[in-house]
Image (cartoon, rainbow, N blue to C red):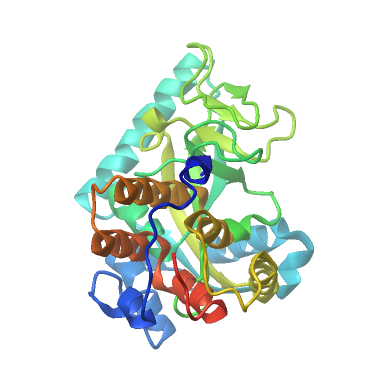
Length: 320
């Protein structure tokens, strides 16, 4: 997001009324009053809720909580949904993953290096991934980013729930995927690499011996990643932590937020790929390629009403 610092916020946008941001159209799904409705969008995308005491349910729940470490005691797993791959496109993606897995086995001497990995985001983005596949990638913006691609986290990594986004019912969602890694290479922090350095490698990791991040290149993101399960949960300690960080960024008396500062606040809630996308639309707005109305609409679509409400509660007279 460094590109905005150079402009010194020459173009600004004032939100005169909270309702302007949250009620001028119906593109963002209205908050649902029950958990049943919260899961409706998952089920519309071919997800099947697993019953408690189901073998898969209990295995995934135990693995998820164990991976959370000490935070696991404060996490409530509310539901686990399984991707049925029942649609025509779902069947095609399943068959594509099988074909690429077999091809990778042949290339790598019968070891395709297939792992389970987590991807955290909003419920809407997860539904879009299940329905249409991955469409956004992470670009370097800090030392925590390794190359340009889809970043996923090993199944045993702690604390990755903050990459998920709270929905209208206070739930967060993590997507558990099967990932074809093949031969991995180490990617340096803040690298702008977006493909293998040579044909010997297939994906990236931040550390070869003890990886905490898997990097799937853009060309492989919809062939080497197969979404399998969605874990929906509550994590009070993480929500309180995110809230306290936001309060430290700006005092409540400050009624003006520069756009790059707003991005910093939203980054506490959103996956990095969404921050990159918001940045792109703001740059288009600065260049007069899109109107203020379009920018607000895109901000709602990408950030979600829940995150924007959280910011506006802290800064009721927000100016961007």
